[in-house]
Image (cartoon, rainbow, N blue to C red):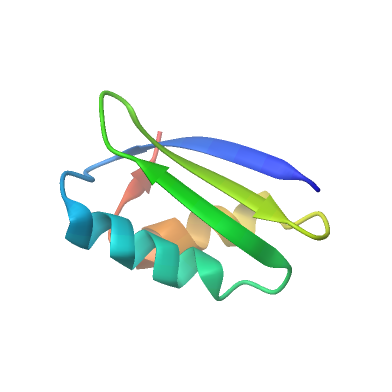
Length: 68
């Protein structure tokens, strides 16, 4: 299973976690989204097939956060 991890700025609470999980989870092939709050905050995505990094970054952006 392909796994991708991003550092993301702006996430500070459980609402942030839910928003990112919802947006990224809608991408075809994504099976799991793990969000860790901290310095830096990270988003780890597992999928059944390779997923475009551009699509993942766009989904995180749509949720209101920035990949750094």
